[in-house]
Length: 413
Image (cartoon, rainbow, N blue to C red; front, top):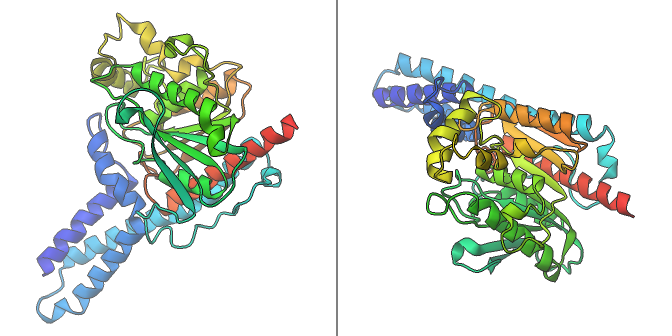
């Protein structure tokens, strides 16, 4: 048994080390993410597992074999690294609150007059059950058709159950997946359920995927969904005058691009007169430069090795304008809506440098309120299931959205 214990603990120590310091190198991004993301967010569970395994090694198993010195050293290293991850995750709530206070005011909590918790505590049981998404007090209306087509032309609506809604604020969720995979039911579930519990209506939309459907099909579909929400959400109790948008990864790109290009005719073929304006955008670990404008190695590699041949099926040099137009970074101006931009410091799929450039442009060129949170220790997709870090982040987004809605209501009254 000692040999098995040693192997388990050495493997766990290596995984924990990658979570703290992701594998370096140009080609290590995907394996570093795949190995580091679950370890980072399930660190409390893995820490408990290694402590139980070590206790068993020192008590029950030592009756039949000598405890493995290598295994015990590796277990100590794993426990130390996992404890470091947990400690860092527990600080995220305070760090996010500081980011909110810096950008929207020390007294931002006094502006929030909508129901719901506004403290930094985690919901009871949220970390113990990381894959529990359904909430009894939230109703989900499935597969609403927002335009002609099959299942990629459908959306889901989340709203409070057994409540008479009228004029509820609306949040649209756009899924990620590199513009090539993913569905409306896979991402943003924590945030949508949380906001629905607070009286919001949340809409999760599908869109057609590359490479079968090349860009700009994806943003066109997103804008069709936004237009549908403007025209129909009142029937479900929503307020079409207040629509925010969110998304992660490729969904963060599409959400940001939609927010920055309201009513752009090129992205609204045959529905040019439809309203696709957005009040605010919350973008998680998005991609903001598909043209390589920032000249970072990641943006150039993404453009040349993936976006060009797989998403656009165009040459980035010969069709540069299409790539520039698809880059949120190129659309920042004085008309930009308010943004809350969130990115993990340890993200190896969408390195944080590009997001820093985007946030700098937002702050320099727009008159918008810009909140930026760079989450220490967070990998890509860190908010997909419930963890200490993700729940603190979802709580901060809730407060930001409630603040934004309350501020907008106060200004218009």
